[in-house]
Structures are given as structure tokens and as C-alpha cells.
Image (cartoon, rainbow, N blue to C red; front, side, top):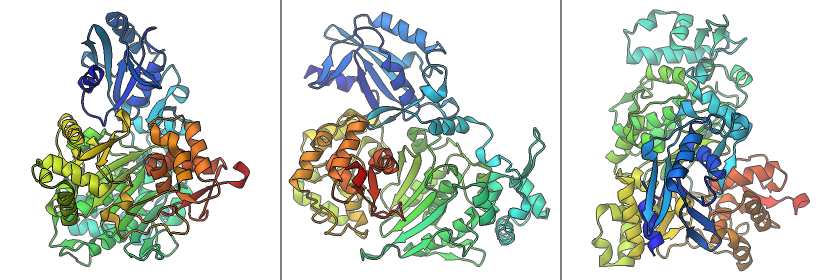
Length: 613
């Protein structure tokens, strides 16, 4: 259809860009500004004026007067009573003409750290929006305050914590850190200082010139603090290492490191212990000397250390969930509270450095960890490429804000996957180019592939990737799931599944047969009544939040379901479903946890609470 051709022409970059259609027959719609704010505060996106979204599909009606609409748009963009900031240039607003109809296409960039939040009206607490799967949502006051805090040129970890000083630092940690520093740079001038002098140089102690307050900084307590003092000053602080290497589903952890009173659980001690554990498991020649410095250093171990440091220095230690590092048989996952301070495009390109905890970053740099020039991700990707492993994957989730880095230790093209695809598609598979092969293999290994993920794997331009994915759909290799905003692709004939079902996670614990509606992890099947109940979500990529919660409550009535199972039933990302709905419904008393004492269990399941049934 002509409308589909026009839609393809309107795509400025890729299907990973959030696209919103709005009718403008009556002029610039008021909802435009909520979407503008939401896109600016999330990952950016495109607003097409002149297209109405109806139950029957898109209605390409055009706008009555494109020139007048653009004039109104520019006037309101520069009216601070209408919106807090104009992020657009002439290149961001285009008029597209098709068959006598005119459409105004607005490309909204992601706002920079110092520009967020972008808000409607005069009050950021009431006018800030963000973008999630179900559309624009009004930010909570806590989300707004986090964005405002990230604006500051004074990093959060440089704040002096009143009533805390060097007496709250762990003496053994100070000694070990000094030894690491001296081993790396024995002639450094700072090493001639006593402990207090060294701590001032590093920013662990500071005197605030404005207030006169002097004492330990947030960074100092994080890096060197005794755990009792650290938790008193920063109640949300939590670090957690989980090792899941046993194929036995009855074994929850093969090793775990959490603050349990047996060690001073500050960031430095956590870093030392985690790097040792992760390095020992890698099947690459590696040895540590008695000062925990590497012998016969390899690029993959350097990448691994960089990943651990990144999680620690970029974390928002006021946020929920703490820093969590999980080691599986075939991947490592590192997640931390907080949002990305740069766009995904900047992260992929490298060379842009934005750090939430700059004093903590300096402390790690002095002992050989943490890049300041924006090359940390480049170093991580280079290390993984050296082993021909699949490219690292960055995920960002909202409510609560978290960033996850997944480091697969699986071949770019696993032999068994390559053979299975050759068997399925025959000689047609052999004729594909390298990017097309990677698209299909990624979809098979990881369950789905998106434009953004293929950018991470191949490094190619998003517009070219869009063409590759669309061609693979036309030729019968891939099938598309959802439309526009959350478009993803899976191999034709594969049942939609989450990453836990893929070959790279075969060692993970599957749900037990008696508790799960799945009959095996490779070919999940649900009772017909569950599929019928979930049909509204399976048939629509966009549902109101209230309706989605009602569906979840209906599915969980009288049965335990994990976030993965709910994701499969509802055709939604499991992590997004948990952060957007399940956690909130537990808090509201609508759902109950199967394991209330350990809310973050990977096999956590949910059931509709009796009072809400």
C-alpha cells in the first residue's frame, strides 16, 4: 500500500526509534507536548503529525496547513510557559508530501543529562513525562528528583556526609588500597601523604568551601567505609554477587557474596572479591600476584575488570536494587541502579564520557581501573571480540531505573545453531550476507533480534539494518513481533521466548513442572484458557496500564506465574513487565510473592492476592 511506502520514507533512522502518530486536523494537538517531553526524557523518537491511530489501523489524513502548523510549533517550542526546553533545529522538523497530502515529521532527540527533565508547563514535578511500552507516563516526583540531581556539575559522590570522617573508614581497606596504588605507580607523589592526606587527594575526604563542612564524602564511604557506617549514611547501598553454575535446578547458588557481616562490604572489597571469582572461572590462562595484579594480562580480563568498575562508578546509590553481578555458565550480567547519562548511540560510538560518581572513578583509575575518555565500552567489546563471543548487550529499564550489561560467553555463530538453521532453510541460508546471517543467528540464540541489538552485534548503521530485517521478513527467514515502537523479530517457526530459553542459558534453573504451565523450556505451551485471557495483550502492542494490570491479575488468579511466563503469555518483555507492573501490583496488595523473604529471586512467582481476587 502507498501508506506503508510513505511510512518507510518517514523513518529517519530505524525501527528502534520510538514513533508516535497524531492527528492534527484541529491544529497542533495538546498531547504533542506530553509525547515531546516523554521522548526527550527517554531515548528520543519521531512524532508524525497528520496520521490518526484508529482501532482499524492508521488513517493517513494529512494536515490542513503544514506551514501554519510549523509556525505554531516553533512559537510554542520557544515559549517557556509551554515547554521547558527547545531541543529542535530546522533539521528536526520536516514536511513530507504524498498524493497531495502533507505530513509534518518531528524528530525529537534524547535530551542530554544537563537538559533533563524536559517538562510541560512551569513545574518539572508535575509536567515531566517518560516513555514506556504502553506509551507516555507521568513521572513520579522521585524520578524527577533523580533527573534534576543528574543535572548537577557537582557529582553526587563528592557530597560531604555530615558527622562522618576518616574514623569511619576501614583501616585494612585503606592499607590494601595504598598497596595496590603503590604497586601500579610506586613513585606517585600522593603516596608520600599520610592516610588523611591521601584521602583528601582522592576526594574521599573534602572540605566544602561554601558551608565549611569537612568530613567523609559519599565516594569515601563507598570505597573505604566500614559497612556499619556505610549503611548508616547510605541506607539504600547494596552489593550482590551471584554465581549460578550448577545444572541442578535444586541448587539456587553455587556461590554468593553479599553483605553478611563476614567482610567489610564496601565497594573496594566487593570489587576485589568479585574480580577474583570472575577471573578464576574464565577458561583463559590467567594468574594473579599476591597484590591481586595480573600476570600475563589478556584483553578479555581487562575488559571484564572494566565492566565491573563501570557498574560500580555509574551506579546511582540512592536507587533501588543495588549493584548486582550474576555469573552463569555462558554469560555474565552486571546491573546497577540509575539511568544512562548518554544516549545508546553515544555509548555504541564511544569517546563520550559521562560518569555519575567521578571521585569513585578517580579512585579506581589510580589502581588501574575505569576509563575516563569514554573508551570503556570499546575496551569491553574488544575483549569480547578477541574470543569471538557474541557482542555485549546494554539494556535500560524504567521504574525503577536500572542499566544492565550482558556479556555472553557464546560464539558469534554457535556450530549447533548454524547447523540447525542450515537444516531449516537449506541452501538459501548459505547465500545470505554476513549481516543477514548475524540477524538470524542472534534471533535464534537470544530469542529475538531488534535493530538496536543488531547495531551492537555488527556495528552497522541502523538504516541499513532496517533494510536487512525487512528483507529477511519478506524472504521468510524472520517474522516480526509487534509494530513500530517495539518491533522485534524472531526466526520463522520459533515460539516467542525470553533469553532464558536460549542455548546460551541452558544451565539456568527452569521452573518446576508442577508450578509452571510450561511443558519444557524449548517448546512452551499454555493451557487454552490462559491464552484466551491474555489475547488482548497478544493482539495489541499498546494497552492502557490499568487494562494490563487487570490482565495480569486475571492470569495469576489461583496460580503462581513467573515474570518470564507472564511475558510469554502477554507478548511483553519480562523485565519491563516486572519493573512497570508486577512490582507495583505487589506494593498495591494486588499480587503476592511466592518467596516474600527473597523478593529478587530469579524464580520469583506471583499470584493474585486473596483480598484482590
